Length: 427
Image (cartoon, rainbow, N blue to C red; front, side, top):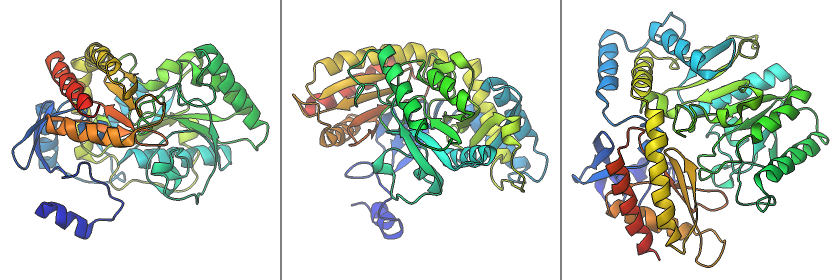
């Protein structure tokens, strides 16, 4: 055990998990690579949990942060803040939500917490519809709508949560159905559920479930849900903390795969927009955002430094068409990984879109989740010079692959090769 690891254990909660048998101290990064305290270099296919979205040490972002820090670091939302207004203006335009307003937070958890406050206040209901296998953050309210028991440490809740089918396509009672039948069955389940309860405030859903192992429904499910929700006056919250900003390649926002009946009423975002700086936020229709009748501010949300980082990062993302790069390079990477998976008895499925890819591992010859294999592949990939993540529903048996969106084709090939060796090492 390293000295730093020993010190970490002495001052940190037992539930604050670390990856790897011998935890890694990352000291610096550049582009798609990071280095540890021993000087080892790694290709980064996880980006600090999908947060280093464009590149490590991106000059445009570090320059914007440095220049803003040299002027003023903090003022709070009690004062006019030019970088915050400028970033909000750009996000309003990109969101697709008409007459939208933006409130900045410091994390995705806080963004979802705010969205729940808005929805329950607007609708005068504490009932929330959420998806099975979902994850929405670590606050008391966010945990209470999380449909993944590995990330839900308490059943106590300020909300009544009702869980809906549909977030996982290839498991569960409807997995055997075709896409159209799957959507129809999930809609029927939602209709039936609403016949047994008071009217909920909102449905909150990740278009692609992140912690749940990069699972998603067929395109159009949430559009079909929207028809039901609209009849009941129920709001739709799209949790875009992991799916936003073009990571899926095909769409800038995950909701756009389900946009037949228009944009969500509320959209939450975080992670990648700051490229490592702490930014989260909520976008909502003005009438929803303005429904609070008491004071509410943010001390650190909308900080001039983080807003400067977000502006520079968003500009770089759009100017260099990183969504298009995610589509092109991600498409090649997922096909390469599917070919590798076909040769492994441990791989049940390779799924995802753009640079958001999951590899689900099972015990050979069965459909049973294999968290031990996932942990072993994580270790083997690190030994080979590649950092990846893991997640999944009932058991943590999905490898999560989410590199910075500037990933090159040679880097994608290199990472796929390391993963192939890591998978072979576990059988």
